[in-house]
Length: 336
Image 1 (cartoon, rainbow, N blue to C red):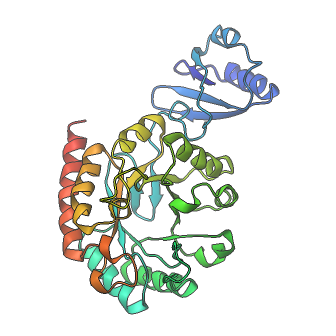
Image 2: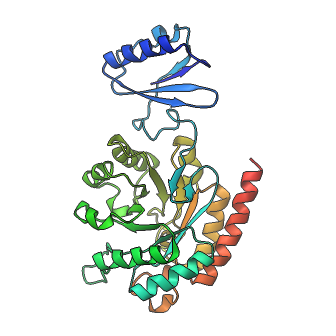
Image 3: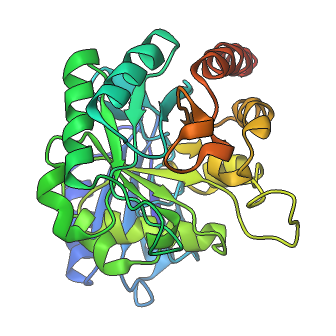
């Protein structure tokens, strides 16, 4: 349930209303905007009389919310959430570029690449340290050593870093990582999500290949219900009947998720398509659709990458995408 208050509500009446609502066993989330104050009621609201609340002098309107996700729901939080990572802001109309290799291969490799990416327009560096692979015989990443190499690249470039955490037992190794990534395979790992709710770090939550929009938002709800409101939704392709690409990038996810939720929405065109030749057009389409960021796989020598070479672009290609995507994003923002 959402209670929309009139402008400048009487403080005594507001306090009395909130006390009464809490006595009904619901928690009250208050969002104060430039024009309105909104009370989001989380819990069993079936016994609360809408007409009774609507009759109060300070109340503009009362609406029941049918969606099961509350914290992630735009009805509870009309303004876009903006997440600050160092000097980088994700959400609110800009376009953040997150770039790096599918796998960290060595300190020299990631540091050299990071310097090139920074000069090419990247805002955040990411790299795979723990690699969740379909085959146990495939390269599984450098693991803790890979995290150390990422941290070294952060020291050299000053860029925030992001890395995928596969299991909560790895959390101590991620204390100097700025953004934790939850891979598509772990979108439904609810125990992991609950644990990340207690960690004060932004989380990029990737959509599972068979997940609906509501499935993704409910997974975000697991994190947010534990106290961590800094969740970034990531569209990275869904499973369809089309075999030409690894997955099918769902461009419509960007505007739909932004209608349903206040959380930032980014797109991963690399793993969605599985084809380096499609990364540029899908990136530009994502920017045009209103994405808050792009997450792109980049490597100096994709042909000899230890994993994910076929979907990885080179740094010159990334620079071209960054420039074009920024222009599209700026044009879209200027048009309102």
